[in-house]
Length: 104
Image (cartoon, rainbow, N blue to C red; front, top):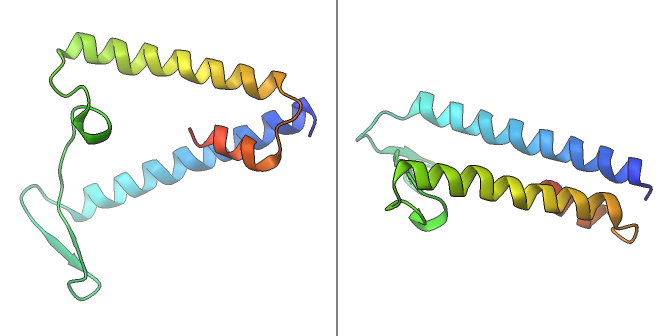
């Protein structure tokens, strides 16, 4: 893949990933009310709203708001810039690797 193809593939995948993420969040915010449990698939799946103020497994939930914002905004930004640099510079990346980077 050329650099242009890698970048275009990554951009399209990232945009699709963001759109799906935002649509599912909007859908669940619409069907869920705080404190209510919604039963789906004849009780096979129970869904209830829970807000996580940290990251994966509440990592960072105990941090102050300022520290959490610095870590999760600027720290993630540094990681994404590094992934973008890798995407642009590495000519050996295949389509699967490009899609994996885009989904990060």
